[in-house]
Image 1 (cartoon, rainbow, N blue to C red):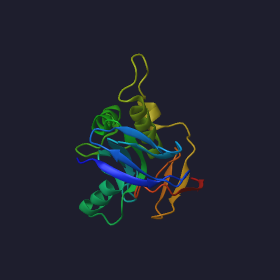
Image 2: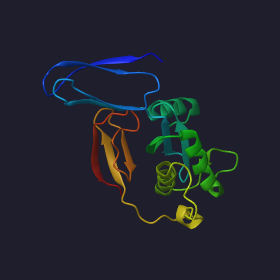
Image 3: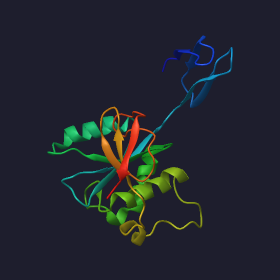
Length: 197
């Protein structure tokens, strides 16, 4: 990968500044050399773990991972599946190790897996909680920490769910956590509509 140079105008003093990002940079914060105003914050994202549902497959969800944008993955999945309706992104989470996290999630929910398929018989809020636990913990629970039981996975405690709208692509989705970006187009123009029924 080549070094990337970004030219920015400082919002503090209006000076044109340059920032460079080289291969191997995992995060960086760039400041104006004149006034010290923060110009840009950047960080590398290894990938995402996502939870999908489909209107024609009630009671089933798909948990997967991608090292691309979730929108690209879902668009390809919709095209390849040939199904009459599109998959719905219930949630997506940045992951430091997306492939390992997805495998851990499938291990925890193994008894809910549809034989011979990559689908799980679990409702989206329960799956989202398991994904959050795995992604936020970095992989598996600490020694002595109880794993999510089947009863919890099958019958989750109520979690407030909200309807969200992307102001750019008009995608609507439901999720408990407050998203910082649209799961389809990655726009930050996200608006909370209402509590989900």
